[in-house]
Image (cartoon, rainbow, N blue to C red; front, side, top):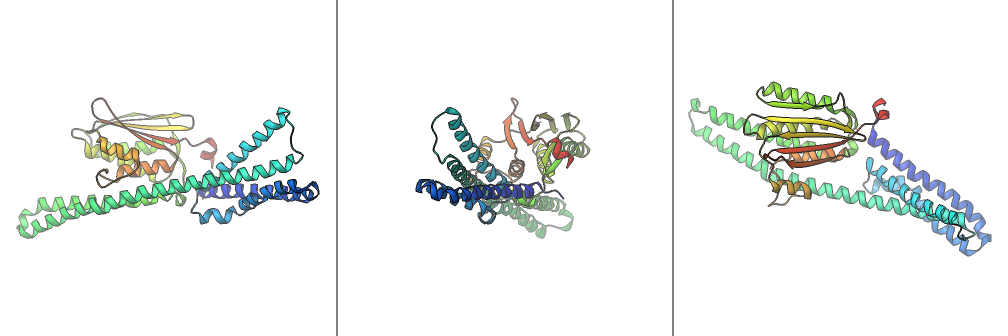
Length: 355
């Protein structure tokens, strides 16, 4: 099976190591002639050999840093950016007609090696910081779910059980139904928490082209069957292939579920999909009460505190899954007090759809 993240990790590592090998060989060849050219030429070569050898060993130290999957490819891109900038600078100097050193070739190879190493180092630091930030976000949310949401649900369950023990058998129906609802809510919350954990472990998921139109249609059809009185409007193209995986279904289920659960009247949902170049946008507009600004602030800050937190884990799941696809999620309010949720995805390329 094709594994995009695994391929990106292999390609990224191969690019960094291959670049290091090529630069090391070039610098070693220059070192053989630099001995007779003088100490300055030898120093130029030695300055480049060290970072070049570090790049050669990238397949050893990148995994030990905790980088995996698409993160390694991003680090390789940073290395390529550093190499590209230095190469362009050398080219500009050469074309300018300014006098250049006799050790120009060795200087170019050394500076390219150094720039590649610095680029890889910067990319690694940024990716590790991003992973740490996402880990903190997930820990804050999951701690709140376990300490607050689950505890409250269990308290409700225990209260109804106490009532059941004190009530005659014929009068237990209401308490039984309430107990069943609490248990189902608890099960749903724990399942979402499990999906959050999977969403953050992107290296173990297979992203591939998925038709967003078909996936959304399936959820809206189910909504219309379960809630015939619901008003559903659709504006879709024939197809909209995006980069996603099986968690896309959970994202759509959460968004549609919110419309039904939070609607104070007959559920109303307008959904449209647009494809513009490399970006595919899914937009959902409902008539539910607006998401409180305090919750929107939490999502914008990407952090929770004991005093400021969201009410559930569903929207966090939506945000993390879509961001793991390389997309983004935005929340707005309609003029009449409803909600607009906009999800942006990366459009699958023609080549990706043929794989």
